[in-house]
Every structure is written in structure tokens, then in C-alpha cells.
Length: 219
Image (cartoon, rainbow, N blue to C red):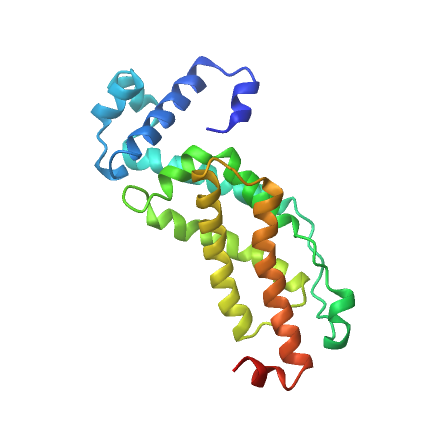
């Protein structure tokens, strides 16, 4: 769970809830989440079934609660970011005016991943995780990544549409690679790697608008 939880004093009830969630995540590394029974979860958490039902109706409401918390946390982090209003950069000014620095939305994503490593490793697992959660998370992320594209002055064209799909996938692939490799790369390194894709897409759009011969050069 979030390491910040360990830094504050929590109630006995909250400790029990966290133990249930932690045990659920451990079991998800072994089998598909909706195949986990309340009985084996209680055994893992060393609680009674009655205690479990004080917190959740069943495994499905436990999963829903976990996912809702993660989505709410990510949304809250994104909402704290200041986005500039849409202002497309003229092609002839792109090189001088474009901001190549990584946008805050990328740093927010990887800090979120770092704070919820155990939960995300379980939920993103292709065999035992929840693919529907990944879809819900992509829907949330798309809104905020689109704001970045607006801030970059990226036209709402076919290139942007394809880039957004690629950019979303790279968020997940980059996050999994980073946490599965015990964060051997620094946060700055992984953010800059992802940002290179953003810069590349914007530069491609700039070249297509400013250089009529560019399409011929890449064919």
C-alpha cells in the first residue's frame, strides 16, 4: 500500500482494512482475482469471515473499493496540475517556442506508480489482474494527456489520435518495466524517456506543417 500510510498513526480498524487489502494483493499474484474466495482471503489475513464482512460484502466489492481508491488518487493528482490554455505554435516558431521540458503530468504518473507499486503490479497482471480496470484508468488518463497535447499546440488531427493511443500504452509499459526492474532507472530517467516520445510526436507534426518536402523524405 501507499508508503505514506506507515508514517502516520492509524486506527486498529484501518490496520485491519489494510491487512485485508494487502492479503488480497498477495493472493492476486497467485491466482485470478475473481477466483479468490473469502475463506482463503480470511486465512491469509488471519481474520474471521465476520471481520471481513464488516468491511466488504464480497470479493467484488473489495476489488471495486481498491480500484475506486486508485482512480480517485490519480485523478486528484492530475487535478492539481496547472495546464496552459490551447495555443497552437506557428510552424515557423516551433523550434524556438516549443517547451521541451517534461510536463508535470508525466512526473505525477510515475510518482503515483511508485506509491502504489504493489496494487498496480497485481491489477496490471495479464493473467490474474483486471483488464477492465486498465480500461477505466486509460479513460481517466486520456483526459489529462489530452490537456497536455492542447498545451503543446498539437492539432486535433489523425497524428494526435494515433499518438494518444501510443502514448497511453507507453505509460503502462514504462511503468511496468520500471517497477518490475526495481526502479533501477531514476524517476527523472523514466520521465525523460517517455517525454522523448511526446517531443518526437510534436516535432513530427511541426515538420509536416512547415516542410512540404518532409513527407517525401520519410517515404
